[in-house]
Every structure is written in structure tokens, then in C-alpha cells.
View: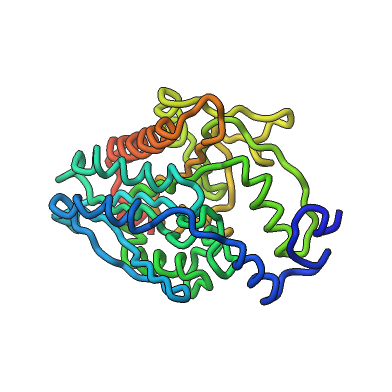
Length: 315
């Protein structure tokens, strides 16, 4: 199969160069506002939380402040709970679910843990409803030191001092029909490879780390979300998006090896959510509610275990 058969940009079998990336970038159109949807939603939270700009991105004439919402009275002796959303800008419920969680439940853990929420890691992509940044880079393959993706580099720098004090990290994502119709074909074209069609699962699922699986933690999150929306089942091969199941509704990836967001810290409990917003069985509000349910269940499980991530056995 040639690149031209499945994507309009690129020469068959050849990775993109600067010209192809510029052509792709020229097709990306701003469709919504990071300032209106995210920054303006955060403003009313300033009396209850510490809102901090942890970096910024400048793409042409566009300036994007990167914002983290923190517990107002941070206590170093408490474990840290980390929530990230909008790593892929097109995955809407990751952003709005993170904001809804803070609005509704962000104060529930005062005195028990420090809360750290980054609701929109990739604002340029959020506005254009896309997966990549303007350089055609996927931030969720680039969370490492000296990252070529500015979105990833900024978050890595923010979290570097907290790598060993984060108890729980949940990264909020979606799997959409456009993964198959746009983003996977674009990836194959960008890299000069053939596109092999896949199957989009109908329902919510989680991604655990293949190196340090936590099946009971993942199961607790799945059980909570199942009360809000349906859980994806395995395909005819016993897999979800090409990966075998750890437990029902949970697959495993090499999270740290691939530079995924959920692997930034050494959190004992870490997971990546995958909501399916294109299902006829789920509304946008249900998708946001599913993200909130996942966050709350992940936090409750971690805090109930009482593990201190700074114990010597974890270092």
C-alpha cells in the first residue's frame, strides 16, 4: 500500500521532511479557544487553589501559557496526587474531565494529600482538535529529558522535583474514530510506512505499564467507571488495539520506554484512561463523568493503601 493511497501528504515510502510538515501544518485550522475553554474556567478556582504558570509555548504569533492547579496549602510530608489531561489536544474529555474533577472534588483531599492537576498539556493541539504539536510531533511519545516537543519538555521539567513523591498519576485520554480515519494514517505517512488498518474498541479502557503492572489498582478504576459508562471488551483476537488484556478493560504498554505521560514520575499507582466519545452509548457529559470517576477511584485506592512513595524500597 502506498502512502498516497491513504494520506494526501508525502511521497510513498519516504518519511516527511520540512516541506511535508509545513504542508500538514497549513491544513490545521483553529476550531476552539484554549483561553475561553481552559484558562477562563480556571480563573474562578484561584481562591481555592494555587494556580501557577509552569511554562509557555510560542508558535508563530500565538502564545500559550501552561497552567497547573495545585493544592493551596502544599505540605511536603504528604503524598502527591497527579492528574494530567489534554496531552493529545483532540481528546476533549481529558481536558474537561480534569477541570470538572477540580471543580467538584478538588478540595476533598485537603490535609490528606497534595493535588496537582495539569488540565491541558497541549493547548495548540486542543484548539485544532489534533493529536500532534505544530512540528508534527506526538507529545505522548516524547516525555523525556531534553524532549524535542515543547509540551512534553515543560511538563517533565515541572515534575522532575516530584518524581519520587508522586503516589498516583492518572493521565486522561480518549480513543476516537479519528484515530483510525486520520491520526494513524497520518503517522504512517509521516514515517514513510504502510498503514495497517486496526479496530477501534467501543467503550472505556485503561493502559497499565508492562514493567510494573498494578492489576488490582486498575481493576478498582474499571469498576468505578463501569457505573458511569460501558467498558470495552476484547476483540476476536482477545486484544484491545492490538494489545492483550491484563484484566478486563485493561491493556499493558511499555509506558516509560515509549515516553508516555504516565511514566514521567515513579508513581506506584499510574494509569492512562481511554474514553470512547464516538460511541452511540455515551454522551459528552458521560465521557467527562467517566474521567472524573476514574480519577476519584484512582485516588481513593492509592490513599487507602497508605503507601508512602518515598519509602526506600521504591528508590
